[in-house]
Each structure stands twice: as structure tokens, then as C-alpha cells.
Image (cartoon, rainbow, N blue to C red; front, top):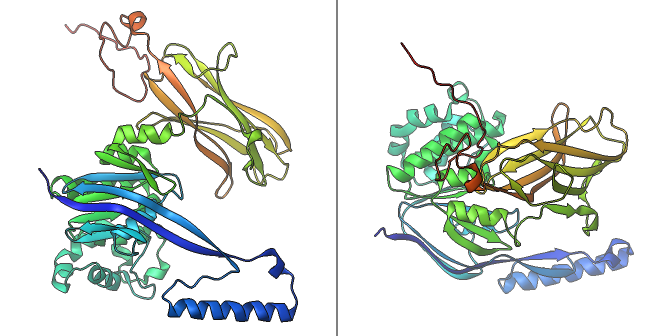
Amino acid sequence: MPDTVIRALGLGKKYVIGHKTAATRYSTLRETLAVRSLGLLRRTKGAFLGRDIVGGETHEEIWALRDASFSVCEGEVVGVIGRNGAGKSTLLKILARITEPSIGKVSIRGRVASLLEVGTGFHPELTGRENIFLNGSILGMTHVDIRQRFDEIVAFAEVEKFLDTPVKRYSSGMYVRLAFAVAAHLEPDIFIVDEVLAVGDVQFQKKCLGKMEEVASRNGRTVLFVSHQMGMITSLCQRALLLEGGQIVCDGNAPETVARYYSRDGGAPFAIDYTKFPQRVGDQFATLRQAWIEDMEGRKTGEIDIRSPFKIKMQYALDGTAPELPAPNFHIYNTQGQCAFVCSGLGSPERSGGSYEATCIVPGNLLNNDTYFIDLALTFIDSGVHVSFHERGALSVVVVDPIEETLNSPGRNGYSGVIPGVVRPQINCEVRRLS
């Protein structure tokens, strides 16, 4: 049985934030000086007592992580998933020894390399070559180790042309290439990677995933990987931790945990009314109002026969000041976080204000027998991409295969087992006899 290399017991991290009271926003000079003097006295007293120095007249305690207990064995690749603010980065910073927990304890056996932020440990005035040696030293490599791996690091990062250029002139993608290359070639016992790979291009992401797979499988190293791309989690990780509100709510195999992430709070609905939300979903250009799934007869439903087409609809409002023509988007994912397809189009021939409805018609015999989750988004594309809203996993639909009726249909041809694939279109396979 593999040895345990990470063991966390009751980890918690508390932050204290300060707020200014409304009264201090409009005050006399005398009141301002009195408040500043009192604040200075409080901070001085707190410093002597070893407390954190927090500004503001009122203080609030926030638990970024609470009662997190888990263990990781040698050679495991574990994904960490959850919404923004769930506590993922806080957990990794504790494991990487960047911050200390407020409560609980964690024991780690082996050398740890972490890649939590783009360009951590780089000096902007130094060249790429100099930063390889600087960053390698910070991560625990000796000068001899760095020299032996130098050519391999440079080749992996693909920054040969700019090796003697100060990194302050690097793009964020080049930062990631170089930082990942140094960290990956450290050959750590435990490799911790946050969502920084999202900055790189697709080809480099694949290259990094391949390197992490090599580190885990061939060398028996342990990898902790945070990502919002569920396809990466299910393809790379055997196991995943799901965090919500700073707590671990699910610890299991990656596909099941990703399914739990998408079906949180009892499952995404097949119809939702955003006008009843306390805060509007959108920005100054567009607001999401309603969304639902319906069959071709117009009945709202969350279950569709695999052979039947159906519609995904959303209603949104434009305020008339949109920068460009709006493009509504529907992103369809299966329970393993793999994207089946994206449906997108122009919502209006003009940018005038008003209410609009976008419809995506999904043909029958396209999706496989599975539960699918739908992101709702609206973007404006000019020189860049402006996203007014992007609701992840907002809707869900169950595609059902009545096997007793489809057993002898094209695609099954009498086969009763599970048919793999995100989609399952009926595509003819032509057969001819060769003379």
C-alpha cells in the first residue's frame, strides 16, 4: 500500500477584514483626526499582542477554510475543484507552506514544488536565463542541478529567443511557460499547481498536462491540481476534492466528484427565473432574465428521449449601450466535465435596447445517454471579448435511452452495453465488397 505523503486534520484559515462605517465618510477634520489616532493606538496595541493589523472601524471574521481533513498517498493525482471563493487557493497555500493555518495541522513528507501564481519568484529586471537560476534556487535546486537541467527547461518553455530578455517584457503566457518548466523539472515529491495553466495556449496546456502525467505515473510523484476545466480534472486525476464555502463536501473519484460539482444543491433545474434573484445577473450592457429547456411542442422538461430534438432557451435584456453586437452562448457539458459542443450566434441585427430570446435547437440522436449541464453566457466581441454574464451549470437535462426500443436501431445494432462518447450521432457506415 502506498505511503501517505500529505495528512491534513481539521485545517482552518481565518481572515479578519476591516470596514469603514458610514459616519466616517463625511466627517469633520477633528473627527477624522480622532478616528485616525484611535486606529493607530489600536494597531499599536495589536502589534504588541501579536495580532494582525487590520484597518477600519469595524472588523469581520471570514473563514476561507474550515475543518478540512484528508490524506493523499504517494503517486496520487488529486484534483481540487469548487466555485471561486470556495477555499481552493487557500488550501494549496497552506500545503505549500506559504501561509499557516489558523487551526488544525498538516504533515507533509517530501519536497514540495508549487506553481500558484504566474511568475512567483521571478524578478522583473532579470533575464529569463537569470530567473531560471533564481527561481530554481528558491524551489530548492542546487546550482549544479539547474545547470544539468537548463537546456531541458529552456526547450520545454519554448522561450529560447527571449532567454536574455528581462522577464518584465514577457507576456503572461511566457511567464507561465518558464515558471512551469522550472517547477516541473525540479522533480519534486509533491507538485502543487493552481489555475495558472489557464493563461497558456492550448498546445502548451496539453504539454503541461503530459508533463504532469509523466511526473505522476512514471516517477511516482504526487500531484495536486486546481482547475475550473472539468475535462482536465477527469482526464488527469483519479480523485478529486470538492470545496464549498471553505469546507470539503465531497472526496471521491474524479468523475463522481465532478458530477457532484455540477449537480450541487440537489441538481441544476431545467427552468430558472433570474428576475427573482436578489441581485441581477449581468452588467451594464446585458442582463440574464430567464432560461429553460423545452421539447418541440413547447413543454418545459428536464428529461428528453435520446431520439428527440429539444430546445434550450434564454431571455435577456440589452440596455442599448452595448459596445458591439451581442452573441448569446450555450455551452453543453456532460457529467465528467467534457464539453459536447457550444451553440453561439448573433442575438440581434442591431444593438438597440430591449428584451430578446435566444434559442438553441439540439437535434435528436446527437447527445449520448447522460445528464448534461448547460452554461448560459452572453459576450460582445470586438478587439477583445467582453462577457456580460456566464452562468456555469445553470440548467441540466437528462438524455434517456429507452434501450428496449433502440436496441436494434443504427448505432446500437443489437449491442446492449454502454456506448462511450460525449455525443452519439447516427452516422452511416458504408460497407462494400472488394473484388
